[in-house]
Length: 246
Image (cartoon, rainbow, N blue to C red; front, side, top):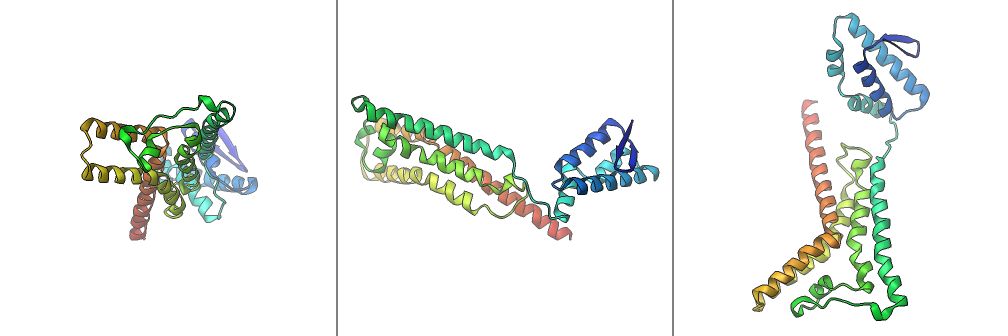
C-alpha cells in the first residue's frame, strides 16, 4: 500500500498508516507546518526502513503518537487545546441549577406545599441545616455541586495531561465545597463527646451525613480534590525522573 505525504511516497502497512494518522491528529500547528512535519516523519521512517529496521522497531523507538506529537508541539510552542470532556462539568452545573431552582419557583406559587424535614434528634446549628431540606435551601445545597463543577472544569490536566502546576485554584474550590461537611462532622464529634445521645439517634445523624455527602455533591468535590492531588503528585514524580535522566 502506497501513502503519499507531501512529496514523499511511503510504502506503508495499515498499522503504520494508523500510527501516522494518530500523530497528525495530535499536532496543534497550522496546515503548512503539519504537512512539513509529516513529510519529515515519512522520510525518516523510510530511511530507517532502508537501514533494515522493522516497522514495529521504528514505532517503538519513536514513541507513541501522543509522545511524538507532544515533542513537536513543545518545540514549536504550539498552543494547547483543552479537552472537550471538561464541558461535561458545565452541563452538570446547568442541570444542578435547574434542579435547585425548580423547588424555589414552585415555593413562590405554592408556599403552602413547601415542607421540610425536621432536624434529626433535635440537632441544631450546622447539623440541623445540613440534614434539613426545604425549597429555600435547595440552592444552598447545590453549592457543593457547583463548586465541584468549577474545580473540575479548571483542572490543568484538561490542557496538559502532564501538567505539574496550576492546581491551586481547583484544590481551593473543591476544598471549599467540602467545608460544610467538615464543620458538621466536627460538630457531630463534639456533640457525641459532650452529650449522651442515644445510639439510634447518633446512627441516624451519621446516616443523614452519609446521604448528604452524595446528594449534596460533596462527593464530587472530594473526587476532584483527589484527582488534582493525584495528578499533581504523578506529574511532579515524572518531572523528577526526567530531571535525573538529564
